Amino acid sequence: QQRYAEATSAFQQFLQVFPDSELADNGQYWLAESYYVTQKFAEALAAFTEVTTRYPLSRKLPDALLKIGYCHYEMGSWEAARTALIRAQSEFPESTASRLAGQRLSRMQDEGV
Image 1 (cartoon, rainbow, N blue to C red):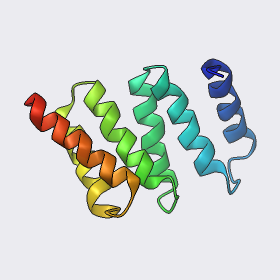
Image 2 (cartoon, rainbow, N blue to C red):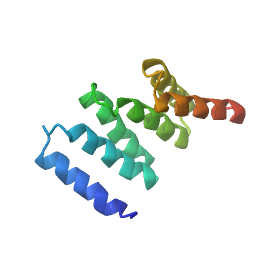
Image 3 (cartoon, rainbow, N blue to C red):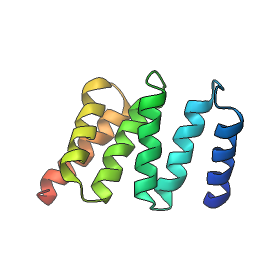
Image 4 (cartoon, rainbow, N blue to C red):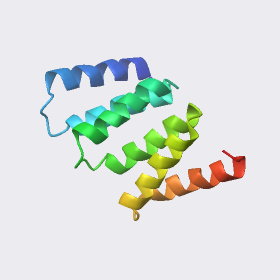
């Protein structure tokens, strides 16, 4: 419903109230996504990075790596974008995130960045 500010607040509150929940990794991922879709790329980057550091066994890890690459891309940090996208591919080769990372890497090559 595109109520991103409300979603951001709800995810923040969830993570504060239930930091040890088995759903905390998902909450962190979707908090990051709420920043990403509103083009708050620096905030999204920090929140996606939190998924990778705080929840290294999360099922959201491939997607978080992909989005870290996307955030860096949007901010013009080409090498950091490339590093995150390659990591998504190498660590999760059979995932959708890997396929999407490959597409973005190809796009970057076509763009000469």
